Length: 123
Image (cartoon, rainbow, N blue to C red; front, side, top):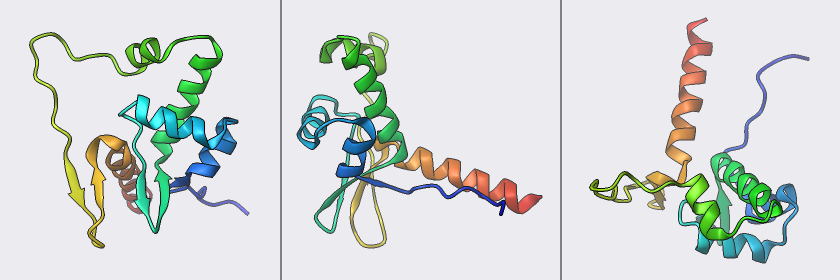
């Protein structure tokens, strides 16, 4: 049977920890150490986007190579050019009133999914 692949909208913190082969408390620490890594809490569960999963896997790879958190931040999230102002964190509200941070990767991922759907419909 062929068809479109099923893509995940989110991963639980336990799933992320299992995929990355780290302990859940390590993920908690990384979330506080790397502000770009942001979970969304729904129903008491922390959920991560596919982009967050990729970020965790990159962090894990760099940690395994012996890089410090400061160096990882520098590699993965380079500071903006001097003189430019920091981009404010945008937040949107979902239909159920939950806040989703625009810099969490969710919006970019959803836009990519919508583009894929549009391409499929145009065929």
